[in-house]
Image (cartoon, rainbow, N blue to C red):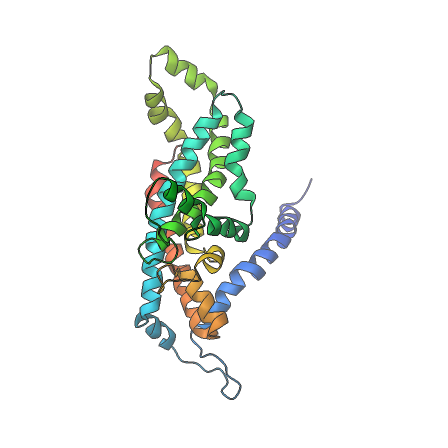
Length: 292
């Protein structure tokens, strides 16, 4: 018989590799960023020194930071509900017995497996003034030409459209797996009771999909605040910081302006924001989650 101490030791040894990777690549970088945020950036003739809350005070008075944060909130508001709703709609559609169901699933999931740099370049062709696909369609319809990525009024909306197209197929996979896990007996019982398709979805399917919705929502929030690669390719934050998201601004501060301490402070602010949002999501949605 295995002693409790030996069993506990075996369990900790099995967990040790995963815990080591988690600490080295997740917890330690976050802790290091927190510590560096209270220091100044080292220069060739000026070593790093403790500055307290100076970097955070700089963020409070930084108009570009507030502009990036505002853009990111609008970006999240535009991408999260739309991508989740579209993913759920696509999952319900391809879960039915329709002709070409496998092809439809593959088509919906294809944008997810494409690298974001490739996706950004594809959509750059769509948005190119005068020559892009959207401009060609607009010209055929007699509509005026427009620089979608060069105008402050439409640049963020164009970037939001790309993000929705990219992420909806990824979230669809989770919803599709959850739909296939629902017992078909429930659908048969709903048919016997004369429930409509909408009633069955609202009263049966959607409540059972709440665990998946919680998981997808948390991932959607994280993705909305860590978007940087297709911003670099498509707009570089322009025009006039109209598409500068918070992670892109952190990248600029850290690697273009080489102010690593201020970038660490901005990173800490972002981590705290995401942690608070995650707590609110769990606190609000956990009571509405129904586990089978």
